[in-house]
Amino acid sequence: MRPALLDLHRADVRRRGERVLGVAAVVAVVAALVLGLWVAPPDAVQGQSQRLMYVHVPAAWTGFMAVGVVALASIAVLLGGGRTWAALARGAGELAVAMLALAYAEGMAWGHAAWGVWWTWDPRLVTTGVLLLTCVGYVAMSTLARDDRARDDRGPDDRARDSRAGARRTALVGLLAAVEVPVVHLSVLWWRSIHQPPTLLRPSLSAPIDTTMLVALLVAVVAFTLAGAWYVARRLDQQLPAPEEPAPVEEQVEEQVEEQVEEPAVTTGATR
Amino acid sequence: MTGWSVVALGYGVGVVVWLALVLRARARHR
Image (cartoon, rainbow over all chains, first blue to last red; front, side, top):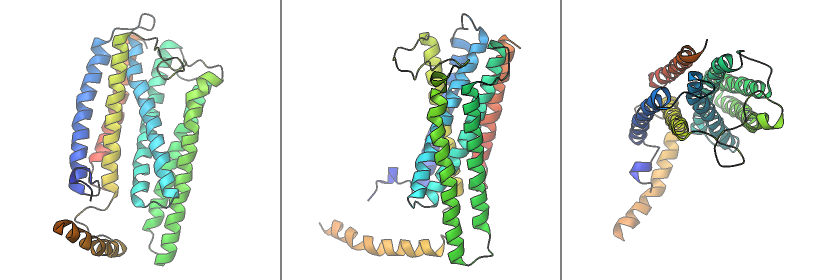
């Protein structure tokens, strides 16, 4: 039996976990804002505009992580996983769109200050744009599949078959997005790019960055990651059936079967 | 646009995006 603290099938356990994540995210975001806007020094060359990096880098990181979650959950869907995996992938897909768009916006503002242009045909910018559009496509596919599930002009068998097909199509787009992430990350190394190479995630481990700036950046990355995890957890809860709602008939039957199977095991444990 | 004005624009966009996500995640619909 699962310990109650970790039993994510229980709505109250999930809610408590979300609250802890939410509070931790708020604390980390406040710390990141203080560090990024006040404690960290202005850059010697770029001046104040370098502070955009404390939003740009965490947003891109969280976007990539979210695409990773989409990919893992999509694999689970393709292997026959149920609604929970599809709902997890959907929430992470939405987060990926928001974070990649935010990373793009921050990059544009910084580029305007540092390069003198809002946008240019550059490998990093183009590959990131393709990834962002793929993620938008993923969310759109997921919405299409959801709307198709809601149609009631088919028999239950056709409906179940169409639902599985829609989930599989959506999952394939999720995997396509995951394939693009390493291309985006390595684009600055593969091709000649105006975008700088990675500062932290690079072959040699010593990061060429001031310690205060590094701390501000890492705290911002933690803050974005926590807030992103909170978002995905909340969205997962919203998409799954609420506890007070009666579960579909098939699930009720499954639960009854599980209870029948579990009961003797509990009795044995009690007598031991 | 340079210095603090571009920082204000960037952080402002960040606040708007996160506010939208928080509102969506806290909405009662499914």
